[in-house]
Amino acid sequence: MTTIITPSQTCGPLFGFAILPPGIHQTVDENDPAAVIVSGALLDGEGRHLGFEAFLEFWSEGQACRVRTIEGRYRAVLKRPPPLPATAATGAQAPHLHIGVHGRGLTRHLVTRLYFSDGANDADPTLALVEPARRRTLIAEALGEPRHYAFDIRLQGDDETVFFELAR
Amino acid sequence: MADFIEAEPLRRDPTYAVTILRTPLRPAVRLPQGWFHNVQGPVFGQIKVQPIDSDLTAHGAGEPIGARILIFGRVTDSDGRPVRNSLIEIWQANSAGGYIDSLDVSGFPLDPNFRGAGRCLTDDDGNYSFLSIKPGAYPAFYAPGYQAWRAAHVHFSIFGPGFESRLVTQMYFEGDPLLAQDRFVVGIPDARGRDALVAKLDAARSISNSFGPPRLVATPDGAGTLVQPPKRSDPGALRANPSALAYRFDIVLRGRGATPFEDKA
Image (cartoon, rainbow over all chains, first blue to last red; front, top):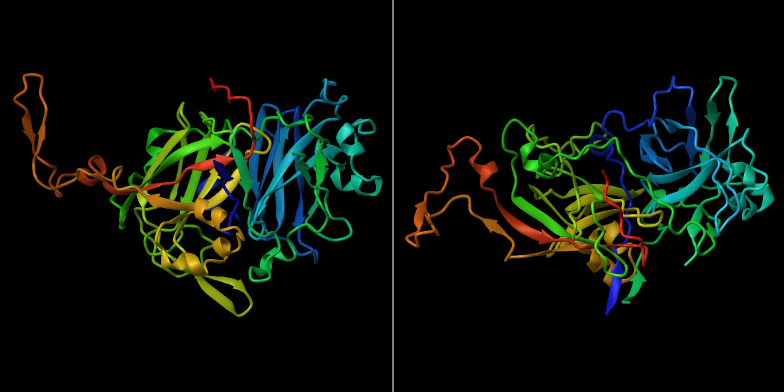
């Protein structure tokens, strides 16, 4: 018997009333010394932002938060993820967050990773899979304010963000 | 192991214009087999699930307008194993096709007794159910000069155990003539994929115990007792004794041989 994997569909433009309960935008108080505040824009192939039509899910082991874009920008607050030790499968990993990108017009969500510009990224095995010129699309830049980082996501264009999928 | 196929919608679809500039043009970087296939997906501890959250007819001060439906089904991985204790969120229009969302510009009337959002956890066998009302259809603008009515639908968000099991999709209703013109349905080239999103009417599961004649209920002494149906005028009668058409929507998530999802504390 053949099983059909349930197909994905766009989240559509109207979801904010349903899946954004209070507090879901953060996993830790932003004044906590362990917090990182990540913000940026979500942009299409012509550099236009996605308005209110997208939401992002950030997660690392033991934490997850969900934020919507407001006039194309998001702001998420999480605990800074730790570096991950080497396993039988991969070498040690630099601190990173996973990001799921859901939006009107994305018939399946996208998954990318956010690394920190002040992290020890050189030996990260996942970054090593990415062609060198594109790695910077995965690096959040430290802002002047401590613990604040900027990370734009570009769905197309010269600086198209690198997205990932699992080999099967 | 069962065979499985994927039947995803088109990513870039000229008849759904907004896809053209939003779909990445470069191929995704593939993470090698065995690297992160067991990495957990997002788990939202902030979302507290209460039993009433799965009854969308019970979220207002009064009864929402619309045909009652029970949406139920089972969530499995691609090996057919139940996906346990996993969050499902749904959202939908009211019976007139209007969303309570402030960004809805349809102009359809809002129902003060219907928000259109629910959540639940799957049980130990992967089963879930929601009580709701049948959503109305509404017109959508797919591309400049191209407008068509969307089929009635319910949005679903499901997590499952891992990195790749995360799914956001939409459920449709068997027999809806608008299925043939709904771009999101038609955008799935494989008919089996289209069919997988269509919930099937299940007459046997449909509840019909609200009103009607008194029912004979068995008692230990064998004599039985007549139970009077609630009167419509009883406060909360509809809520306590819903009649609802049942629609079955089973969900198969990506990921085979996934580690069974550990129970949350």
